[in-house]
Length: 455
View 1 (tube, helix red, strand yellow):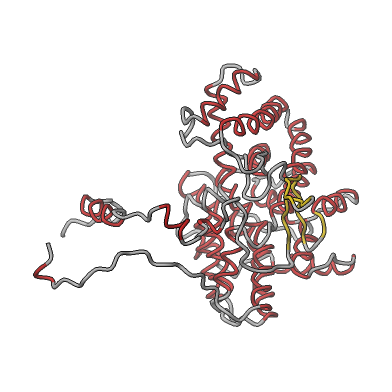
View 2 (view 1 turned 120 degrees about the horizontal axis):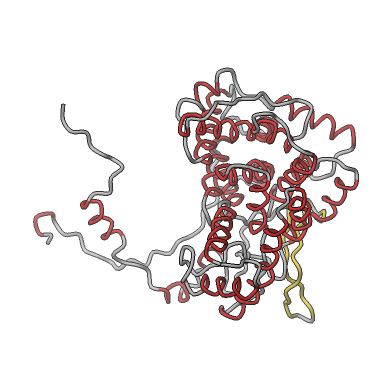
């Protein structure tokens, strides 16, 4: 029998060909010459306007006497301040994610009977096709839950009797099903990985029809199905704060681009998952956790402000952790003085740290949150302010909730599919044109050389 080829190996031949791929980079001055904004951001870091949306609005600037000035960040879902949304359901001791999904999809807050009816519908949809777990999720477990999610979403296409129908009622049906199914796909994918790759007990719980999305995540994940009220409420808040963030974020923009091609819902959401998986987007909180672990390992007294500041300087000087020159969890494409999601979340991080007897770690996060912006500003040329973003706190919260790190980004996806669904429907309703930006070719002209005459 001939030797099998290792198709995963990067051979010398592949390396040689790769060098040819990278042989000619585009000169930086050409971007200036042709006024091309890399990353679709102008020279001041503002996103290039690519569309209009009703779904959400992010702002961090105000204009006074014709001059733009930084302000504390604000986030609106369908025109309602996220702070008011959170204060509303918390004051009534309700879970807020289901209400938030309704608001994002339909543009207004539901009346009590509408919310009850909508929640019942999501619970009905919170199931998977017969044998799907066995035949799809269990057959090929992966250590990467985002890949598991993507594969599962694409496979659900084949269980849909009208997968390519992009009429609004049908797309809404598909989106609602996926919103309800995402917790199952993520948790079951993790349980399969845990069993087959780590040789631990296989635990598959059926979701409870009587509890919220946040509660069901904990209920499905934990062997004893038990969770405390504060655990569920903090996770629910995390889902609300991650549910949407404007049409310009990478994964939501992906939804608009792919939807504009006329493709199906499952392909669109799989594309969004691919965008969210990237460490510059949905995976940032994992890097924060790894950075903070490294800090604790390399700082003798991590409650000493001077020692912590020295470590942060080493991060900026590429002398610590991954030597990337970054303090993870700080800065944002839009926010400058503050990220409103982080401001809201921080209060509940503190409460949870008390409940979990991890106040010292919370104090360390507080110290880094205070020191890092000052150090970054002093070391870097900044066109706007810098502050902790929600990723700085979310990994710590998930760790206190005993969520496995493999589920950190899938939790983000469980929340953000609400926004993706709203953006997909908005694109279908408002545009019939495929999104096709322009790229200017700057390659030098070459003559065709016959094969026998080439060097």
